[in-house]
Amino acid sequence: MESINVASNLAAVTKRIQTAACQAQREPSSVTLLAVSKTKTLALIAEAVAAGQRCFGENYAQEAAQKAKTLHHLNLEWHFLGPVQSNKTQLLATHMDWIHTVDREKIALRLNKQRPNHLAPLNICLQVNISGEASKAGLNPKDILALADSVALLPNLRLRGLMAIPAPADGLAAQRAPLRALQAVWKTVRTAHPHLDTLSMGMSADLEAAVLEGATIVRVGTDIFGAR
Ligand SMILES: *Cc1c(COP(=O)(O)O)cnc(C)c1O
Image 1 (tube, rainbow, N blue to C red):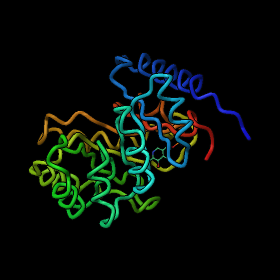
Image 2 (tube, helix red, strand yellow):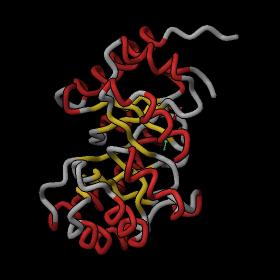
Image 3 (cartoon, rainbow, N blue to C red):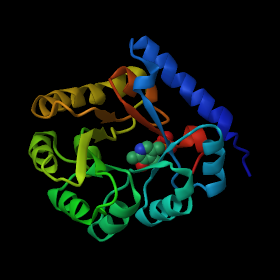
Image 4 (tube, protein in one colour):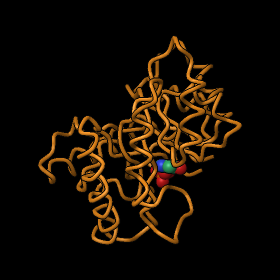
C-alpha cells in the first residue's frame, strides 16, 4: 500500500496556498483549506486533525453523516460537496455545518425545514455551472440571483456564497479563465447580498488558479490524502 504522510502533505498544500495568496496580494488567512476526506478512513482524518486541520469535506451523505457522528467529540467542521438528493436532506441537515452544492429551491426548503432548532443555521453555497456542457451539476449563472434571493429568506439557512467545479484544464491560464467568469456572477449576487463572503473553488490540480481568482475556500483531497 502507498504510504501517505498526511501532516507533510498538509504542510505542502498550505505552502502552495500561501505562495499563491502572496502572488495575488491577499492575506493567506483569507483562504480556508478544506481537507476532502471522501472514501478515506477515520485513521487518516485523525492524522489530519493531529496536524491541526479542522475543516473536512465529504461527498456521500451516508458516509459524511457517519464520520461527523463518530468524530463529534472533536468539534470539527463538516462540509458537504456532493450532489444533494431529496431523500438525504434530513441526514445532511442534522450532521453537516456547510452544504456547498445547493442548486434547487426544493432542496433549500427541505434543508431549512429539517435543520434542528438547537443548531446554528446551516451554511449554504449555491453551486454555479461554469463549464456549460461539461457538467450537469450546478445552476445556470443567470438563475443564481433568484435562488440566492429565496435562500436568503430561510431562517435556518445562512447563505454564504458560491461554489464551482470547472472542467479540468491544463496550465494556469486555462484554469483561471472559467473561474474569472464566475466573478461576474459573484459581483451580481454580492450587489444584492453584500454580506456574502465565500467563493468555494479550487482542488488539488488548480488551487493556485483558484486563489489567484479570489477563492476563500479551496477543497483539496488527493494532495492531502493520496489518490482515491
Ligand atoms: C473530490 C472533490 C474535491 C477534491 O478533489 P481532489 O482533486 O482530490 O483534490 C473537491 N471538490 C469536490 C466537489 C470534490 O468532489
